[in-house]
Structure formats: structure tokens, C-alpha cells
Image (cartoon, rainbow, N blue to C red):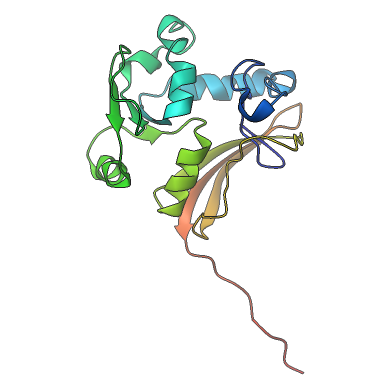
Amino acid sequence: MISLDGVIQAPGGPREDTSGGFKYGGWAAPLGDPIEGEVVMKELNMQVDYLLGRHTFEIWEPYWPHHTEFWPGINEGNKYVFSNTRNKSEWKNTHFIQKIDDIKNLKASEGKDIHVWGSSKLVQLLLEHRLVDEMWLKIYPIILGDGKRLFGNSSVPSTFKLNENIITSTGVQISYYSLTGDIRTGEQGIEN
């Protein structure tokens, strides 16, 4: 879930993530509709594993283990948490990793697809190391100004192909992209 100006912080609720004084928590809810709801439920029912930044994990850890009626797979899927400060959790199927090489090894291994939700700093690190194969974005017609952003300045310039695009009744653009490679530019000069 991302705003037009790239903010991904606290789309779900006012107390989800108030760090940095963020005061617009829950900004995605007023723009939800049945089409978006269907897409979200489809994503929540996928049999995948999860790669999360520590902060996102700590938002999820006290909530999701007790709300599996809404997200049944969250307890069963492996949760790989990228953290230098945590190394254990009581939440079932949680594993802590500390190095970018751990993520590379995880990505190269056999198994389920790995999804990242939220985790802005982690996504920026993944983009910097070209470890993102696909992006599933829900782009909301809203500008938030401040907040944690999806894209940082350290992203490796890359080209993505649009695989699917849905527009909801409230103007949310749901787009699935896959990595195609490096940036190509047009002609560098104009001949007279």
C-alpha cells in the first residue's frame, strides 16, 4: 500500500506506526472497496513465506498470531526477520537473519515464494542489492507529505514490466510488476 508520493507508513490504523510523529495512520481504509478487498484476501490466502524488517515484525508480533481468522497463513508461513537486535520470538515459524548474504541464500533456496509487507528500510536494501523480482503495489490516490517511503536514493536503477493492473471504484491502482533489467535511455543528443 503506497501513496502517490511514495509513503507506505501505517496504512492500516492510527496506532500501527506513529514513529517520526506520523499522524495519518489508517490512510488506506477510506479508499477501500470490494475490488481491493478481493485482491487483499487473495494475497492473504497465498501459501508463501515472509521477509520482514524488525520494526514491521514488532508491529505484527502481538497482533497476527491471535487473528488468524482473517489471515490463516500468517502463522504457518515462515517469517524471516532481518534484525541485528532480535534473535528470538515465541511466534511460531519465526527465524532471525542478520546479513544481506542470509537474504541472498534464502532467495536462492528451494521453497515457497517470499513476500515482503511494509518494511520500508528492508525493501530499500533489497532494491539496492537487486533482490526484488516482483512488486505488487496498491497505489492510493492520496498525498501524505511525510512518512516512511518505499523508494530510497540507493535503489539500483531498474526496469519493470507491468503484468496486471486493476483500478478500483475509489481510484486505487493495483499493479503487479516484474523485474526486466537495467534502465535503457533514448538517444543522448539531437543532431542538427
